[in-house]
Image 1 (cartoon, one colour):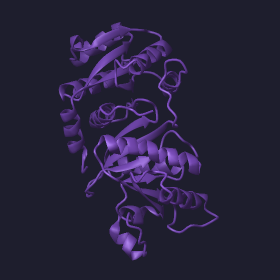
Image 2: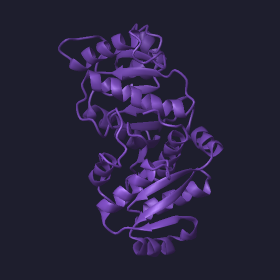
Image 3: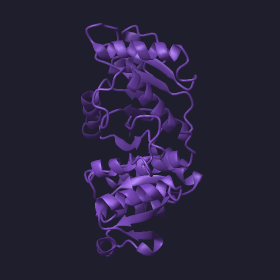
Image 4: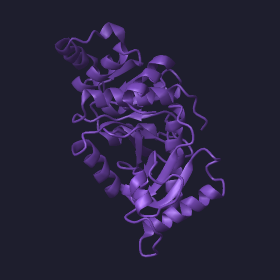
Length: 304
C-alpha cells in the first residue's frame, strides 16, 4: 500500500465500522469522529458527559442526532462502558476521548469485561513519507520501554495483524539497530540475530520476511544497502521497522513527524480490538488516518 489515500479508500470500501468513544466530551475527538462518519469510514457511540458533549457539538457544528449517546460522567466508568461495548461486539474499536491513557488502558485490561488477549499491548505507527513508494510501519515508540527478544517476537506478530488487515502480503520486517553487524557488546544486535533465527525456524508462519540487524539507512534505502554490502533480500525494502527500545522508536517517530513532515497514524494493538489514542497535538488528518487504520483492523475478525 503506497499511501493514506489508498488506506482510506480501502476503509470506505470495507464499509463503516463502529467506534466506542470513551469520555467523548472533547472538541478534537468529536471533530475526528464526524470526519470519519462523513467519509463513510466509521460510526460512533459516544460515552461520557453528554451535557458537555452537546455544548461542544453545538459550538463546532456537529449534529449529535447521528450518534448513539450514553451519559456517564465518571471517567473510569465511561471508559469501562466503552470497553464493554467493544467486548460485547456492539462496537468494533475503542477510541480515547478526554481521559488519561492509563484510565482507558485499565479498562481495556479489565479481567471480566476487558479486551485482554494472549499478546502484549503495543503501539504501531504508520507513516506516509514523501519520496517513498510505500507506507512505513514502526513499533514500538509508545508502550514497551525495553522489550526483550521474546517480546519483540510478539511486537512483530502484533504488527502483522495490521498489515494483514490492509491486504499487505508478506511485508519485510527490519530489526533496526545502530549497526548492521551482530556485536555482543550491543544487545539490540543480539536480539536481531535471535529474531532472524526464529523467523528461519518458522516462527512467523511465512507471513513476513525478517532481516537484521540493519542500520536505518540500509533498512530503507536499496542504494545504502548495496554500498555497505548488505545482501539480505529485505535490505532497503523494509516495511516494518522494529526499534531497539522506546527511546529510539520515539525519537524516530517524532523525527519523521516534525523533520520529514510525514503523514501518520497510530494505534494500540495486541488487544482483542484496536484502540485509537489521538493526541490534541495531532492534526485532523492524523486522527482520520488513525480511525481508518482502526476500522480496517475492526473489519477483520480477531483470532485471539
